[in-house]
Amino acid sequence: MAVDLADGVLTARFDRPEVFNAVSGEMMLGLADLLESVPARDDVRVVVLTGTGPAFCTGADISGEAAHERFDVRAMDVTNRVVRAVVACDRPVLAAVNGIAAGVGCSLALAADLSVAAASSSYLLAFTRIGFMPDGGASATVAASIGRARAMRMALLAEPLSAQEAYDAGLVTHLVADDELADLVATLARRLASGPPLALAATKKAVNAATLLPLEDALERERSGQSVLMRTADVAEGMAAFSERRRPVFRGE
Image (cartoon, rainbow, N blue to C red; front, top):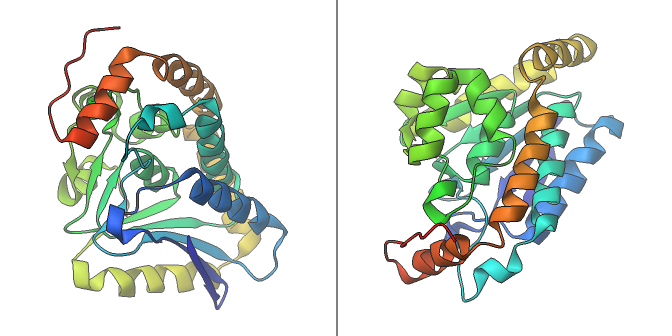
């Protein structure tokens, strides 16, 4: 992660453009630590999550041989730490989605309080393509934003939503031309940074309590489900097929 702080705005940037900002366990641990530190800091009024290059974040890095052997329940635990930190943070968290947001990258973008989509960006719950189920709280946040039917379509069919479709569906809060993303995010961040911090914190807490009450249960269900799926032959096949750039053959094993 690349991190900088200016005028009360803490920006955390996924910074592995060579792999479209796929995240490693080390990156997620660092992000969890960073987000959990924010409530105790007087110098941070707003948090911005964004990516370097053509992608926001394409989820967990599943490249390389025997990738499935690197995944265990600890990966779920750190992912859940990050999502909990985003939602529980008493400062506004803004996602500046500059490109594709897939897998856990999509989950994080949707856990943010405001999600600003560049016109060329897209949102994809790609988990079932490799034999997993959605995680990062997506089973709760997506349905809370766009309803059960549309959430099922995204999750079961792993269909991407364009930025325009995501905005029309109510999945994101802002849609802007690519070359205007940085300016709009800066404007929103300045507005939030100069706003009443106690009122913003209370508002965020109230809205999340009203709309994301199932989130904690969802995180635990996702953790339990993924821990089982991690040990299946289908996941091993899905990851191997991804690395070999072929269509997986799932056998329900």
